[in-house]
Image (cartoon, rainbow, N blue to C red; front, top):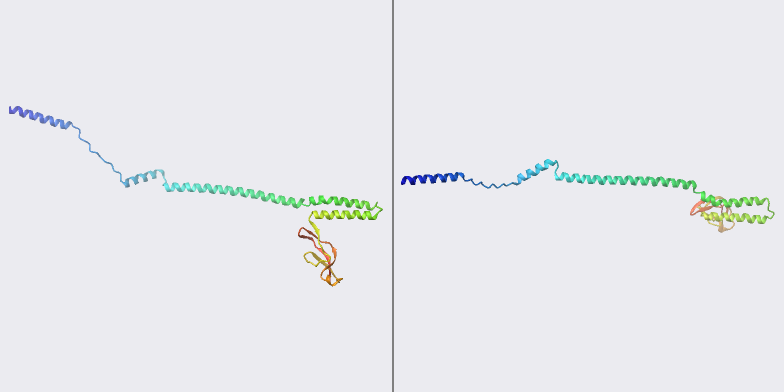
Length: 209
């Protein structure tokens, strides 16, 4: 009987050992931690792959923007210079044309006076009445004076006025007929004229002394 119990115990022990051998051992859980140094190394490795840092990329973008702005300003400057050059050439041409043809209108308005003078000269050989001929010449003269006024030309008043070197040119001295005429213009040999506020021709005068 003891023998049978011993065999049963051995058999049971053997079954327990086989059961333990067939069991799969439990795998331990492994926690992976990445420290800051490893993360930085990973970032640097990625940066080395692209070949430039974020700061360098921003600098390149700013440089490209500045270059584009510079190119635009240069183009605007060239256009402005071209416009100014065209304006300068146009102004020079207009000034040249004005100098060349500026007297055209003045001469055109003067031609009727010339026509009247030619008719007066022709009438001198035929006219029997001297007074009517004189009246015709006076009409032509007045017409010519009106033309001068239309061109802003007016005569300089001289006789009886104080001598003014800005307006008068003394040709000789003459004894003053009265004490109050000393230093004044007693006679005008050649009439002077003003164009607007500028002396076109000085009046040649005689000064009383």
